[in-house]
Length: 251
Ligand code: B4P
Image (tube, rainbow, N blue to C red; front, side, top):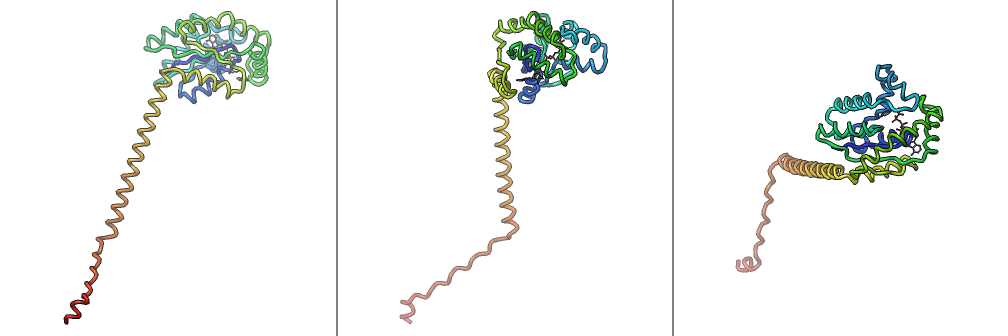
C-alpha cells in the first residue's frame, strides 16, 4: 500500500501534480480542498460550514476535516494506495492520520513538498482567480492570509514527518513536466514502489511467455492440420535398375 502526501503552500501545484501522479502510480486521489468545494457547490451542511473558513483563507476546523478524510478513505474500496492532496494541514491532522492508518496496519510512505517562493504563489493564485470563480483566489489580502496560515500552522507538518526521514522538498518552479519528473524521482525511490514495479515487470514477463507458448502451440497444430488435409504422401516409384553393360555383352 502506497500512502503519499503531496504538500506545499497554496498554489504550489499540489492539485495539478496530484492529477498526474494518480495516473502514473494508479492511486486514489483525495483532495480535501476538492471535497469541500464539492460540498459547497451542493450546498450541503458540511459545505456551508467549510465556506465560512475557506472564503477568508482560514483552515476548516480539524474535527470536520479529519472526519471527512476518514469517511472518504473508508468508502474508497480496494485501491493500491492514496495520494492525499492538501491533508494533513495541521499537526493535529497529522497525528489523527497516523493513528487512522495504524488502525488499518498502514503508514505514510512519504511526504513530498512543493517548494515555491511567495511571489510566484501570489501570481499563480491571482491568475487562477480570473477564471476559477474561487473567492479565495481573487483578493490579494486573502491570498496573503492563506500563505501566512501555511507558514504558521501547516509548515510544521513538514518537520513532523521529516523527523522520521519521511519528508522531502522538491523545487516546484518550472514547467509542469519538469516538476512532475522531480516528484517521480523521489517517489520511485520508495521501497514499496520499487517492489510494485518489480512485481509488475515479472507479471508482464510471465504474460509474454504465455502468449509466445500459445502462438507456438497454434503454429504446430496448424501445420499438423494442413498435413492431414493434404492426405497421405504417395510413394515415389524407385528408378529402374539399368542393365549392366557386362551382362548385355555375355548375352
Ligand atoms: P486546496 O484546494 O488544497 O488548494 P490550494 O492550496 O489553493 O491549491 P494547490 O496547491 O492544489 O494548487 P493548484 O495545483 O491548483 O485548498 C483550498 C482551501 O480549502 C484552503 O485554503 C482551506 O480553507 C481548505 N482546506 C483544504 N484542505 C484543508 C485541510 N486539510 N484542513 C483545513 N482546511 C483545508 O495550482 C495553483 C495554480 O498554479 C493553478 O492555476 C495551476 O495551473 C498553477 N500551477 C501549478 N503548477 C504550476 C507550475 N509548475 N508553473 C506555473 N503554474 C502552475
